[in-house]
Length: 82
Image 1 (cartoon, rainbow, N blue to C red):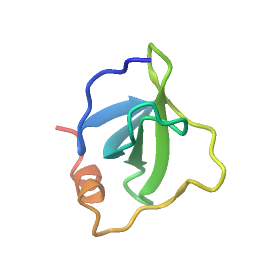
Image 2 (cartoon, rainbow, N blue to C red):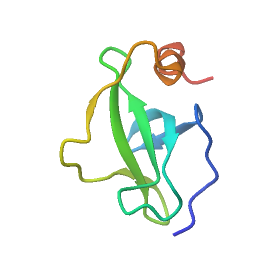
Image 3 (cartoon, rainbow, N blue to C red):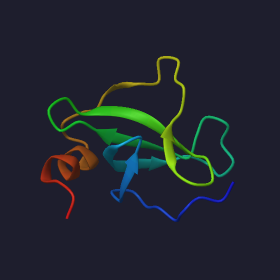
């Protein structure tokens, strides 16, 4: 399913969370479209998918985890959406 064009460090709204795009997954990946970081106080990595209308978090099996502070996307997250 075609999704809006996104790039690393872009902001997207996923399930009512403002997220910074961390990594684009290969086109057609069965696990999702991209990894994103969310939660300024405890930066967390999640996988986002596109359902044709909106972004959503993919069901995960141990894919979620804390994002590293030195990650440029975590710095972007902490700076906030412009």
